[in-house]
Length: 286
Image 1 (spheres, rainbow, N blue to C red):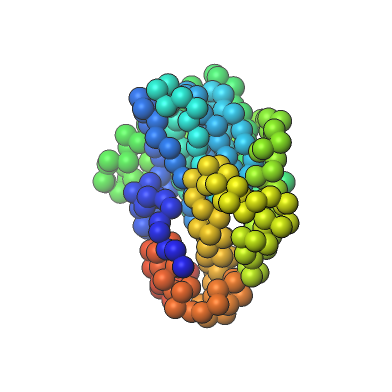
Image 2: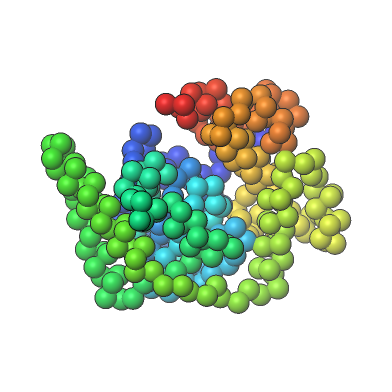
């Protein structure tokens, strides 16, 4: 069983943090493999020649487009011209942080669930609103270096303001029409998502979608940046994490998520999550 990492840990939010904000400009955009996070990501596109693949949807980006990625949602950027400067800012926030800033009148996780229902992950903000958000995110990033308790609390409040204003500004953006190729990949990814905990072979997938298995392997890798096998392992680990988060024992989560033996599950889980299943269970209890 392959346990090769498919996402560089340096791009994840540091352990123990509630939130993070980043604003980057890249003169030479680099390819990113299909990946996910255990927290929410709010991705704001500013410039570049870029497509987003998110759970099988394929979206060509324009300035002001915003992608909301709930925990576990797979996504990647595809740069159509790596020499075009690529600018974006993005926010990370844990479920616990979003719950902590919610009110009885405004349940943020519940609002996000409604917004992203039916694979609707892409939104748009107007230019005047976008400029306001850019100013706010730069202030939050600057304030992150301060260590005095009062200053840290002020920065937390600024991030809260940034996040809630961004959510309030978003208006629905219809997903761009999918060509036959993109629709086919989307159908394949959805099928794997629905059946990942079952004994699912490459031959089974090829037969179901009436394609040559080597063609399927090649096209899937081109579209997602990872292999079918890696993707299935990710889905199974995500399923087992959710089971453990809801109170299941690691061994039960192992077999119910589609693994045939605990040692293989243990190695794959630790390589993907950075801790053992039992350590993850203990962290959820804390």
